[in-house]
Structure formats: structure tokens, C-alpha cells
Image (cartoon, rainbow, N blue to C red; front, top):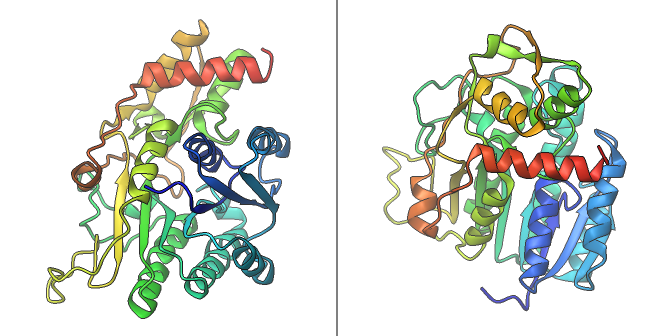
Amino acid sequence: MNNSSSILVTGSAGFIGFHLAKRLLDEGFQVIGIDSLNDYYDVSLKEARNNILERQKNYHFYKESLENYASIKSIFEKNRPKIVVNLAAQAGVRYSLTNPHAYTSANVTGFLNILESCKDFDIDHLLYASSSSVYGANTSMPFSVNQNVDHPLSLYAATKKSNELMAHTYASSFGLPVTGLRFFTVYGPWGRPDMALFLFTKAILNQESIDVFNYGKMKRDFTYVKDIIEGIYRLIAHPPKKRDDWDSMHPNPAFSFAPYQLFNIGSNNPVELMEYISAIEKKLGKKAIINFQPLQIGDVPETFADISSLAELTDFRPQTNIDDGVSDFVEWYREFYQV
């Protein structure tokens, strides 16, 4: 992969965006970062991530919202990136129950502005974040990109499914090469404060109770953030091409007659939530005070990623185990918050 080209990363001060931008900079790429630095969670954490990136001369940052089409188009025009990785989004399943408009604004309108800009400026490859939440009410395990995903359980999931549909439209209408990335429960250093690992670690250290939903009978395909980044990095070099083997009589959702493809990026190893909590307890040397709760609206009891297509194309399978990943997070948390 030629590192002389510029790569634009939206959500560059976010959890995954920060790690990807840092990897790309370490590999010698020019990185254009866009992030609104909104207050969905602690802005100082986003600023701390961004400050690390801004120490590198090849990083050029724009504080901007994807909903501002004129500004986004101007950034494309000025920087002329050849590759775009869209990671900016309004995240969170439960938040979508009470703040629905934030999701249609950021995840639908914002993504449309990215698609339009990619079309107008002849982008070689657009990769964008989807989510394992699109599998919704599916119970056939492991979740495969070859399955239909027409029964979302949250508005967040519905907006991510809409991103996949919108991307296909631009691939088929304008020949824009697009790759959708369905992430599975990402965790690790610099993680979001609204995610389980952060919430559990903070509460256990403060001897506060933690809410454990579905009475602890949850399984998640926890995926270490650096494994997510490795998957994205390898896929950048594989823009999709039109497929002659796509059968319109038996359409496969994973690819198309257009330059369009979907991949799961997960650990391919679902772990029980109580095992995850045990790993945190072990690293902290403290026991959790658990408040068991029923399954929440929008949640699914289990996720499990089929990553065979990712492995076949990139020769990569995530390797980080839960104990090592949790340990890395806890060490970061203690250092960052001086606990």
C-alpha cells in the first residue's frame, strides 16, 4: 500500500478513530482528521487523544461536524484524499431510545455528506463503520455477512443498516468502491466512558455497584481495539471490484455486482459477560458489587462473528485474549486517571 497518499479519517478523536489515525501515522501516511469533539461523553478524553495525534507533523485536524456539508466538501477539496475511513457516528444503543434525532442527523445525514464528497472527488476507496447491532433479532450463530439483516432492535442499528444501503446505492450508481465494517464489541485502552469495560472498572475501583443485564446471561464477541485496527488497515488495500458471480436471483448481501463489500471484524470467540467481569476483578484485585437486571430494550443476548471472509482476503484473524486486552485497558485507565 502506497503511503504517499492522504487518508481522511472521520471521528479521528474517537476511540477507534484515534487508534486508526495513530497506526496510519506510524506507517508514514498523511492523515486528515475530522471530529466534532461533541459532548456525548467527556470532551477532555477526546482532546487528549487528539493532542497525541497533533504532535505528529503528518496529521491535519479539522474540528467539524459531518452534518455541515459545505465544510466537509471544502475539506475534501483542499486535501484531495484518495482513501476515506468514516468512523464518525452517534454511538450507543440505549442512548438512541431517548435521543433519536441525534442518530438520524449524525449517522444518516452526516454519512450522506461523506458519500457525496467521495463521489465528487473521485475517492479510490471508502471504508465505513457499520456495527454488529445490524444483526438484530437474528439468532443464527455465528453472525455472517451472508445473512439478511432486516430486523434491527434499535434505531442505532437501523441507522447503521441504512449506511450499508446508502453505500450500495453510491457503489451501483456512481462506481464508488465502498467497504462496510461490522465491528463487534470493541474494547481496549482509550475506550469510551459509556462502554462496559470503562463503567465496570470505574465502579469496581470506587466500590460502587455495576448493572449487569439479562441477569448476567450475556455473551459478547469482545474484540480488542488493535485487532480492529489491524483488520481495517489490511482492508484499506483491498477496494472492492464489481463481481460477475453475484446472482440477482439469489442475492448475497455480502457483495454485489457493484464495487461493494461487507466484512465482520470480531474476535470469533464469544465470551460470557461474567467471565469478562472476572477478568476485570482479577486485574484490579477487587470484587464487583453486582446488580443483576433484565435484558434491556435494544440489547441482544449474544453476538458471535463469522470472520471467514476477512481471514480469506487479508490472512488476518484477531488473536488478543480477554485477559491480555482487559489488562491493557486497566493499566491505561490507572495511568490516565492517576488511580
